[in-house]
Structure formats: C-alpha cells, structure tokens
Length: 422
Image 1 (cartoon, rainbow, N blue to C red):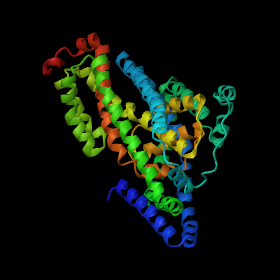
Image 2: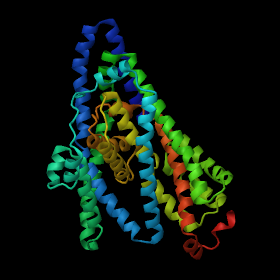
Image 3: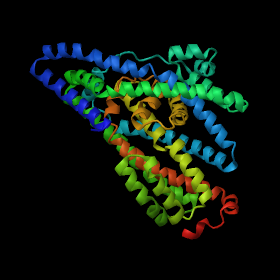
Image 4: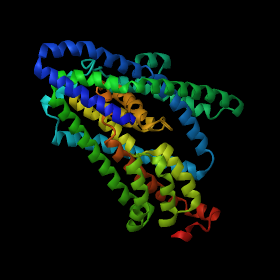
C-alpha cells in the first residue's frame, strides 16, 4: 500500500471516528480526543523541528549548484533567468486568483470553524511587523537568532547570500563546505522519512480532533480545498499552451501532439522525472527543437522549474489564512510570492510527499498564517498532485520551446541536424 493511500486512510478514519463519537457521546468524544490529539501534536512538532536546518542547507546547496550551472554557459543562464520570471508570474497568479476565488466562493463559516477547531495551536496567530520594520529586518543582523525565532525571510536571505558566496570560493574549499551542507541535508531527509513513516498515525490523531469538533463540516472544508487546487492546476496547464505558441513560436497542433505522451505518463505516475523521456522525444521529434537546447533545458526544468509549485504553495497558505480569518496585506503577499519562488529551488530531488510541507512552512511563517492545518491538507495531496504533475510537464516543454527560440543561432551552430524530425 502506497504512502499516500495510508495517509488518506488515516485522515478518513480519524474524521469518521471523531464524527461518530461526537454524535454518540460528546463527553466520550472529548475524552478520547484529549488522549489521542497529543500524538498528533508530537508528530507535527517532529516535522517542524527539521524545517529550519533542511531549508537552510537545501537553499545553500541548491543556490551554489544553480550558480555553477549558470556559469557553464549562456544557454543555462538564460534558462535559469526564464525559470525565475515564469515562477514569479505563477506565484503572482496564485496570489491574485486564489483570494478572488475564495471571495466569490468562500468556505462556509461552519466548515471553517470545524476545520480549525481540531488544529493544535490554532490560536497562535503571529503578529507581523509593519512595512518599515520588515524592510529594516529583511537582512538579519544575527542569522542564528532568526533561525531560533523561526523568522524565515531573513534566514532565507542569509542562505541565498551564503550559497552564492560558496559558489565563488576556490574548489578545494567549496567542495568540502558544500559536502558538509549536503550531508546535513541528507541527514534531515532521513529524519523526515522516519517521521513520515508515522504520518498515517499522526494524521489520524489530528483528524480525530477535527472530527470530534466539526464532523462532516470539516470534510466539506477539505472538499472545498480540493476543488480549488485542482481548478488552479487546470488553469496553469491551460495557460502554458498560449505561452508556448506566443513566445516559443510553435504550432499549437504540434505542441498538443508533442505533449500527449508525456502527459499520459504524468497522470499515471505523478512523476515529472518519469515523463522526461517522453518530453524529450516530443520536443525534438514533434516540435523540432535543437538537441542541445532540449538536453540542457528539460533536465534543468524537471529539477528546478516545477511551474505549479509556487502557484499551489502560496494558494494553500492563502486558503489557510481564509479559514483562520487572517487578513493578508500587500507586504505579506509580497513575502509569500518571494518565498514561493525561492523555496522552489531548494527542494531538488525531494520526494513529493516532503516537498509540500517543506516549501509551504516557510511561506506560512513569513506571511503570519498558522501552519497547523498543513498536515491535513498534505493527507489529501494525492489528488491535486495529479494536476501538479500535469501542469509541471506542460510547463517544462513550454519553457523549453521559449528557450530554444531565444537561442536559435547558438543552438544551430552546435547541432545543425537536430531539426530533421520536424
């Protein structure tokens, strides 16, 4: 039985048992929840304790690696710059569309109350600084204090500077330095895998508390979230088509034909990496893109791009803010957009069940949104993940077509015969 299936079973069982206990005997339900809920809190705290070291080490190694990649040639640098631009646009799309969608179709007050009632620590909504204080403190005077306080944005800024600086030191110093951070990162990943082994039990305990207090209303909030996320996934996928046609100058018909095999693999496996061979074949055989561009840009895109991640991650945090009634200002949205893009580059090689939690927690902390609902949303991620992967595969091929159009002369000099399949 897969990890996602076990977690979904834990979620459904917790909600159902909690609702049944509440309906049968509210006093018994309260007692059972009081015994079981601490298990969920312990599991959630175990996940939280890995976030700071994991994010810092991943950012440092990821940024250093990206800086080295950009230094290898103009084509790689152009691709990385395009990645940043498109990812920023995706995050902005989420920050605009999601509040509008929730304003038009809000979560019912009963469902929101039921959903947040079972979250441990739900009342701890942090107070955020004003714009002036935020600008003053965006560069940390003491990064260790920022880490201790969970102040994510200054900590991320420090990690970015450190990563770029590490890429500039001599190889004899850079190799052991980055090796140390990679070792810490891998150690944190091992710890997280241990913690996630207990995810069905942890999610069951959290869901039981939600079920005893909210019953079917909490399930309604989860259904609301699923519809919203899946709709966003369809939207970003559809937008990739006109972008490829307009900026990549490819035929819409050929672009559709080139993507169909890769999209079929993406839906069946929920893995962009598994779809990579089909993407390469479609990009070269159907679209006639140069081999040099495809062989560099598509692997980079699969590793670093993931167009749906900033969109989904900031939308998830905005959904949680909506449930908690947290008003988000322009400063909080700006911080969220920035971190949604930056953290996207820090999860190279991270399994999908880890990616969601480790990219949304920094955004939640920076925007001042309680993160206690995230494990429950993670439990149903198996459904939106289909649309994530579909959008990522479509975006990968679209951005490759755009990069190829931006470097036709350079590519053709190196690989003059690669368009024979067009």
